[in-house]
Length: 281
Image (spheres, rainbow, N blue to C red):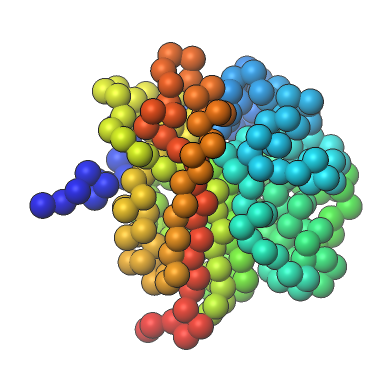
């Protein structure tokens, strides 16, 4: 009999509606038209500048003060649920792909690690975020960063071109996580690795959460169980899959919803995996 974590990715919204509400939320954040943050408390981001609250939120997620200060402009919007840089162990010369790159904060940090001989590609499905990230790239003088418009289920990246995939609280927003991991596997070189921060479901969600557009767009309703994510990664072809919940994340996750304590059924986690050196045909 299937476990609860064998359920499909459906959140109660059809795929197109889910993408639409997510895209609109982050468009509003990018342009400053909304008063909500993303995967964070409503008052931690202003949606338009690298404010002190956004800096402090980033530190809660695991970024150091040096990392926060290393990026110019308003790339840090205080979004996310962890620090994928801490998992990625980047080296000079590597090619990095950021899934759901937003305003570019993680891209610019990665660019500093891989250096001039390396390359960073950011992919985001929200045109307003792509425009904002490109502006931030110019301000940071990062010639080794390119920002592309696209969906993480259909990556605008050629086969076998990437050494490391990073992502910060974005995979949960996808209505087709199996396709996300299939695409990740496709674009990675043999031996390439995944280093993702995301949220996972630890208990049944209250009734109505899955069909609530705000909960879907704010990194709550789309979270999967650990067992399901492990199977999706393994089915895609990955090995050495490790998903580690971060119990201390409850201190910020409980602030994501004014009406309920989502830390009762949600936790941030570190997700790592590797593509085999010789991929199975």
